[in-house]
Image 1 (cartoon, rainbow, N blue to C red):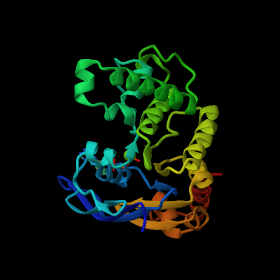
Image 2 (cartoon, rainbow, N blue to C red; image 1 turned 60 degrees about the vertical axis):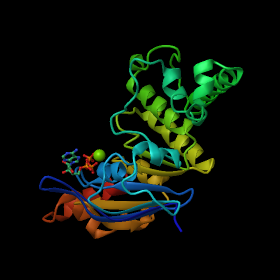
Image 3 (tube, helix red, strand yellow; image 1 turned 60 degrees about the horizontal axis):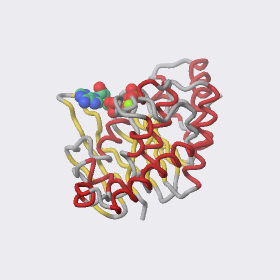
Length: 268
Ligand SMILES: Nc1ncnc2c1ncn2[C@@H]1O[C@H](COP(=O)(O)OP(=O)(O)OP(=O)(O)O)[C@@H](O)[C@H]1O
Ligand SMILES: [Mg+2]
């Protein structure tokens, strides 16, 4: 059985069908990419799985538990973490505190220890701080950790967001367009980071428009169009699927456009 099983999800906004019977899986420790044209439903799918949207119908099972319609906090508690298409950090908190807020240890502090500032509270606080530093080292954060997170450059903020998501020690991590807005060097580091996250046994699902990155890093690629899955398989197989090429270009395309699209999907 897969770690994540998404079955027949439907979601509408007014007249818009964002998801129209979407099914896909993510296996234990697997790296899966969700790709598809703008508006295909990728972020909506992430939002349904992580509890930010409640699907109209369909099922989301994480580790054989039906989590459909549960709150984001409840789903996170089971071991699912995410980042957002536009980073959502606590801008008025320091870099370090943003990651401290994500640690699984902090989530376990007992109210009585917090209120009475017991020795146990202080010990846990220290471990929370140590762990936050460890995750910031892990993602390779270069900037100042004591300063406000909103003063960091964009690429560094994206790293902090990943550090915060990792601090929860997820078994499945969702990254929504992690390469967007990164420069060439940062992108290379992202590939390395994703590999290291995977090496520690965490499964990853990513949405990404950078096809070079998708083809390089994914074990499986799921292609969405109009809220449905139109292809699913290893990168080499998916990139030669005519329906995928059509989805990216529309139906009436001449040969030179198709050749160019194949290049895009291959990540040339
Ligand atoms: N909160 C919302 N309210 C209204 N419509 C929405 C909302 N979220 C998504 N949609 C619509 O649902 C459809 C799917 O959007 P979604 O953001 O999931 O696409 P996407 O594949 O992530 O696209 P992109 O690559 O541009 O990020 C689009 O038509 C979008 O306009
Ligand atoms: Mg999106």
